[in-house]
Amino acid sequence: MTIKGRILVQRDNSAPNRQKGKGRPRNSETAAASLVDVLNLVRLGRATTRQELEHVSEYGRAIIADRLATLTELGLVDESAAGIATGGRAPRLVKFIKDRARIVVVTFDQSAFGVGLADLSGKLLTEHHETADVTEQSMTVDRICTLINWLMTRQSEAPDLWGISISVPEPVLVDPNAAFLIEPTEFPPNWSNSGLIEVLMRRFQSPVWMHSSVETMTMGELRGGAGIAQQSMLFVKVGQRIGAGLVSNGQQYHGAAGAVGLIGQLPVTSGEATGSLDAMAGANMIKTRGIKAAHTGESTYLADVLARGAEISAIDICQAAQMGDAVCTEIIAQSGRLIGTIVATLVNMLNPQLVVLAGSIAQTNDILLASVRETVYGASHPLVTRDLRILRSQMSSSAALFGAASIAAEALFDPTFLKGWILLGSPTRHPDFLHRLETMNTNTQQADEGPPPAPRSRSKRA
Image (cartoon, rainbow, N blue to C red):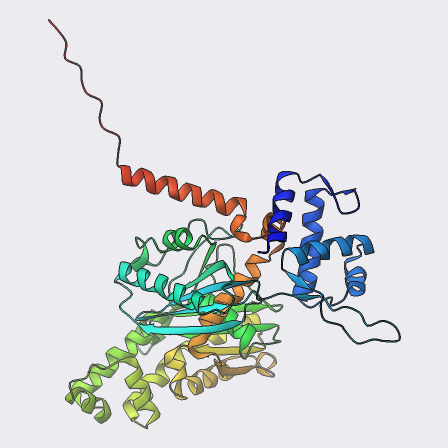
């Protein structure tokens, strides 16, 4: 924030109705609402000049000029570039300054995590991935904080940090009306006592968002992969658990509490066996059946892996199937058929333009994709599958980071949240966020001090 910008923030915060500019009174509530409108029109590219802003927003010339002056002082827009002249003076282009601050993104998988930085448009600038035992909570949290500091120090102009977006493997149920994460209703079991959210909020003095990896990967595919420009998409992640994300009318659908796409809980039947989709078609089932085939010698490829003393993983079965091992091919194909059965039901109901399969099981071979396609096309109405495409993810391991960045960028500039901080100059000054920090600090202090001492009993004299 520039010195000029800080003076502006102090003036607006202490006296929202005082005279400004040419002696015109400004009502802070009205000013915030119009600032939000103007900034988002510029940020989303819906207006690129003052004339377009006047036309699209229907605000008068004086209001547009005043609001652009404020946004310029806050470092959020720039008018230094000239556009193309169309018969008169060339208009000044209004551009959103996406490098005004940074967003940190953190993703967790079963045995790895990633950390990255994004600009305010949600564009991923840099990323770093590590394999780790994420059950070692304190070590992992410390390592993540170290990586965040390292990535921030590599930025040439040391921009502010305005948000942290976290992606985790489990469903995270939150208050849908909360602007940022206050308290998760449900947290991944291995992280329930990690204190990750509190540590990050206190150490970096920044709002935190948290979503499931299926949600963040769906958003990543929508904004940067096969889902670009798609109005409807079904995203399916295949791993130890199988989950789905839904895009409708070009926007991700979150449901009442964020618990969308828990398709791994649905029952499926294979032969005489019945169980959940997770248990019957997920990575654990693939691994279990592969290990059995290795011990019995049905799969020569896996028997060789076992003979070398290596541990057999689901990825080994996928690679063996890709190389033509008949037993492994059938294991993966069976998984694909069961997943395809559930996907076909969703496709018949939702009629998406696109189905995307993601996760290491889908990325490492063509057999799962082929089995899902065969099942979906065979079990769906012709009108539903006429223009339907079923593809693998184009984003691979970057999908969750990219999606987490997009989610945070949208949350930062959501009109309701933005209105609370725009006149203060930074989301880190949002009253709700500051209140949450104060509450956390108070709770921590009380925990450190321990319970108050028990009152001493007074002895009675005879």
